[in-house]
Each structure stands twice: as structure tokens, then as C-alpha cells.
Amino acid sequence: MRIALDGIPLNQPLTGVGHYTVELARALAAGSPHDRFEIVSPLSFIPLPELSLSNLQLVKASVNVFTRRWWTVGLPGYVQRESLDIFHGTNFEVPLWRKCPTVLTIHDLSMLLFPAVHEKHRTRRARRRLPVMARAADMIITPGESVREEVCERLQVEPSKVVAIPEAPRDLFRPLPQTETLETRERLGIADDFLLFVGTIEPRKNLPTLVRAFSEVVANGNRSLQLVLAGRTGWLNSDLFELIRGSGVSDRIKLTGYLCDEDLRSLYSSCRLFVYPSLYEGFGLPPLEAMACGAPAIVSRIPSIMAVTGDAACLVSPENTVEMAQSVVELLNDEAKRRQLSAAGIQRSSQFSWRRTAELTRDVYREAMDRFSKAN
Image 1 (cartoon, rainbow, N blue to C red):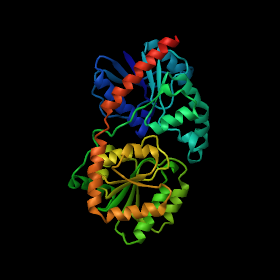
Image 2 (tube, rainbow, N blue to C red):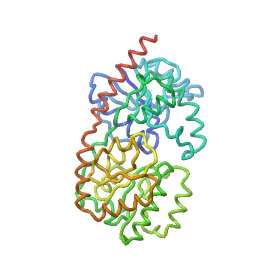
Image 3 (cartoon, helix red, strand yellow):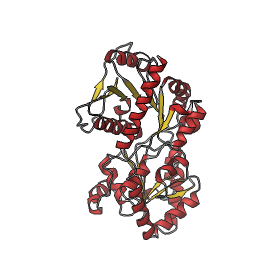
Image 4 (cartoon, rainbow, N blue to C red):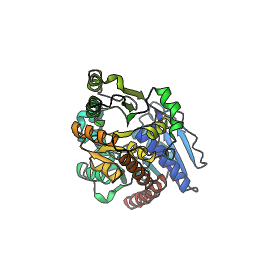
């Protein structure tokens, strides 16, 4: 078979959807050596690590004034011309003309459920296009049961068409000895004692609550502690930056910007605590990556993250500053509990693998092909 995945998420530094696309494509190709896989995009790809699989390639499709309308003209034409057997839209979109079976991954519904934390033009587009894409796809994948239920209810999709398939931490993320983290921390100006958050700096991540909780922790005597916010700057952040400037602890807060995986591994492996206060997630890869590196984790008590972390993380109400600060202080003062969470996190993260994700995804491909053939 010849299978294509959407490569548009790979035209900028990789975040969640980009990593999902690359890791899934690699695992699919490794598990199905007789099938051909391609990641196709009308845009140029950023430099990526070597894919190193003979049956997986990056394809930059040529477009002109007509075919640059990718989803309505360019991609349907490409699918037909190249005789693709299936197309997987890994980033919320599939071709609107049905030239082959299609699978759509919907990572979350935050733009529909929490429009105030996104830019207005993006929420308008999501309201218009997501229902159309959900109807167009033969099958839909979500990263967890909570998003699956939201998709069925909010987009009115029949439950048999939607399958929850968990994601996984990348193989790189495993514990690193403290001595091997020094170079990264010194280069970034990060002290020995620090709390870590990883993710795009945007309102849904609820960082104002974390900053306020951190201020309380420092005020209660932890004056050597740093808060490290690692991730690219997203949108609607003026209130957060103003809060940091007026917090009285701005000199203890470090925004690193986007970091490569090797730097993230060093920070995951050396932080005192990893804190993830997000208000809403489809899955939540950073907590799983952090736990894979042995970081004791404090995470939001919300269904999607609880399903990922299980009993291996400390749960807090994402909007309760006092509870978050108290949990941080208690864990900082309890080395035995931190060690327990670290071991539990490593064990929990080992239960997720991209090989298993790919196996379940292949099952969805077969179902999509069956549905397509019956409809045509």
C-alpha cells in the first residue's frame, strides 16, 4: 500500500502535532516494511532528524496558482495522480474531495470549547472547518477517551467512527545523570533547584496560576528556587508577561524559548519538580516525557491528563493557586515522595510506545478502507 500523512506541521519547529506526525510515520514504516509511506506538504520542511527508513520519505508537492488551494484542489489532485491508498490528516484536516480513504486525527477541541484562549481568526476557522473535516473523513482518531467523547457529542459523529489511540514519549526521553545536565543548565542560566514547565506559552496552559503559586513558594522561604518556562511563545500572552514583571520574583523566572529535545531531556532529568497546570489538553505529552526522564510531576486534575499519568503524578486543581503552592512545598520537602513519584513515572511512561500507537493506527486504516469501499 501507499500511505501519505499530512506534512504541513513540519514546516516550523516541532511541537505536539509535528512530533506526533514524525513519530507515527516512523513507527508505521518500521512496522510495515512492505508498504510505502510519505509525509507530503506543499510547504518546505524544516531540517529534520534523519528518517533512516527506506520506505518513508518527505515529499514537497509542487503547487501553482490553482493547486496551492491545497485541501480543495492541490491535495485531491495529488492523491489521484499518485494513486494513494490512504491519506492520514494528522493536523485536523483531510482533502475535501474523496479520492481515497481518509483518516483524521483530532488532537483536541480547545478552539471550540475554550475559544477565549485562542486568537479569534483561528477559532472562527475551526468552527467553520472542523465539522466539515469530521464529516469528510472515513475514520477519526483522538489521543484519548475524553476527546473522543467530546468529538462525538460536539461534532455529532457516530461513536463507531471515532477511535481513541494514545500517544507516547519519544525514545530519547529517559533519565540522564545529573552530571550530564550541567552543560545545558549552565548555558541556559538555570540553577540547581528549579521547577519546570514545558509547552507553548499560551493561555490554555494556565501559567498565571503557576507564577502566582511560585511567588507564594518563594515568599515562604524557598528563595534559591527558580521557575523555568520552556517553550516557544504563542499568543495572547501580554497579561502573563505583565504578571511576571510585577510578581516580585521575576528574577527567579526563566523563559528559555523553544528548546531542542536534548536540552529538554537535560531539564526533565534535573528539575526538582515538573509542573503542568494546563486547563485543557487532548493528551498531554510533556508530562509523559517528563515522567520518562524521572521527573516527579505535579499535573492538573483534568480527565485527559489523569488518564495519561495514572497514579504516577501529584494531582492539583489547575485554578487553585493555594493548592498548587502547597503541593510544591510539600514535595520539595519530601525527598522520599519525590523518589517514589520518579520511579512511578518511569514505570507509567514505559506503558506507552509509538510501536503500539502505530499498530492501533493500522487497524483504523483498515477500517477506513473498508468503509470507503462500501460507500463507493
